[in-house]
Image 1 (cartoon, rainbow, N blue to C red):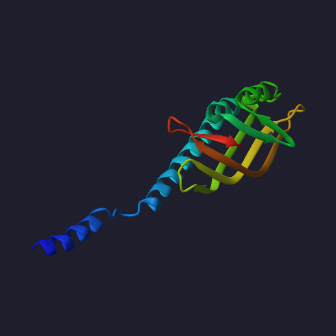
Image 2 (tube, rainbow, N blue to C red):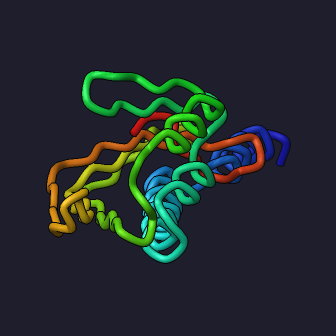
Image 3 (cartoon, one colour):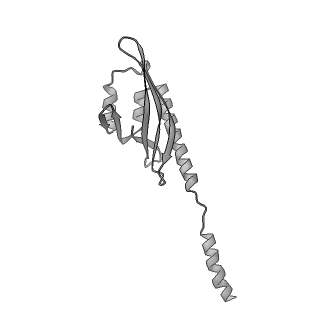
Length: 150
């Protein structure tokens, strides 16, 4: 009986300590969280204004690249939007991610896709710019996803 116990106990401990690999499940969960955040971000930009959306979803250490200029930190991003001449009622920014990925650690992810920026210029002509966006998302201490690069 003692010999059997020496054999059975290690086998029991070995199989008892095995857990299914949830890495794929976690990765998919985090991707979905980022996609939901991206969707809410885009919806806010469309419904409540570009400024409000960007300031709501920016991390404190976020960086925007606009043209060849980097706008670093939420304080400077706020100033950047305050100095824009466009009116939220005369502009529209729409986008949808084509791709999302997340680090295995679940603390950093990114999206990219196409955007359409529509505005009315100073002559009253409706204009449209299209392009590709790339956003880097970072999980915050409270669990929320905020962008750190756009």
